[in-house]
Image (cartoon, rainbow, N blue to C red; front, side, top):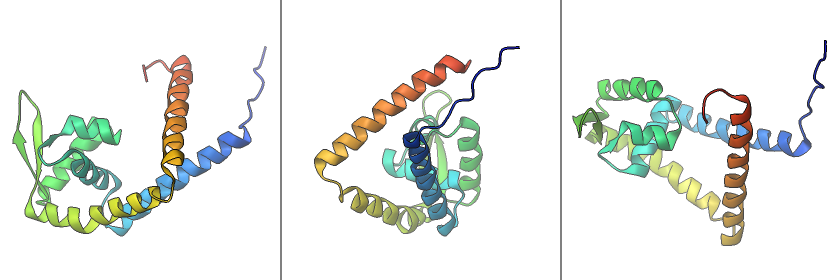
Length: 154
């Protein structure tokens, strides 16, 4: 029986993975501090980015959360009185913040966006451009490599 050789994790890959997980943990901690589930936090953030009246599918695309996760979190947000859903074209539902939801947005999401903007402002415009360029390049290459081993198109 021919066994493949065990791969190794390069030092650069290990450091990148660590940084990625560190960022993931930071956002998880922010969600916990806001007393919001991660998915609910991500939906509020998506509404902030996309604007009131956005669609669930748009939040799926910007947050990279599954349709099922978005749908279940949206239901909880609606039950809590934070959003209301209004039918759009076809089967789509537009999401609108209630007054209570707008208060949460201002108290929990605005400070995070301000902190993100302050953090990214510590980079020069060239550093920011390079960071985004390199991250996009790595993400595209990783997607390509994963597509070689995964059945589902990534």
